[in-house]
Length: 210
Image 1 (cartoon, rainbow, N blue to C red):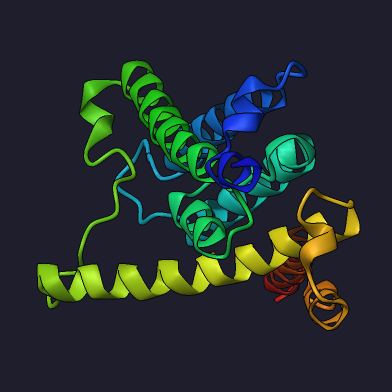
Image 2 (cartoon, rainbow, N blue to C red):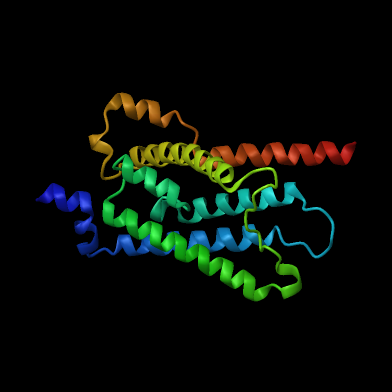
């Protein structure tokens, strides 16, 4: 019965330290900020083409900031795909995973709603919503998003698992030593973002000189 309660996450709900509620608040806030600032970078005040470098840096920096600020609280999943992957690999309890997905969606809706309220009607357009390119059908667009999210979820599950091992998480003792060594070799999300930002800054510098 104890293992059953642990798998479902009932013990976490009954815990007096309130850690699960802090984690849920962190996921809500993280998705709020990601959707607000990320989608805001796509809105333009002129007819000029979108600056893809600006948009990429905005999303990268906001994810970097949220992971740094909230990662130690909730793991900074920031995406239901990541949480679903953590559920499948038993790195998170069922109840906690379901609650994560709910607050992630609520945080995204709240961030987009605030952005819509603060943006003039004439500038809203699709408000940063991902649109399918004309030659692609809806089914093809869905397929592309499915496999892209699948690969992203796999990478983030590896990163989250390595963090759990390094920080001595609840499930760290249950992971074989060989798996721990393999997982901890994976680059963290912070390292990947730092590399991406460095490369982007080098590109800006070379463009300015030319």
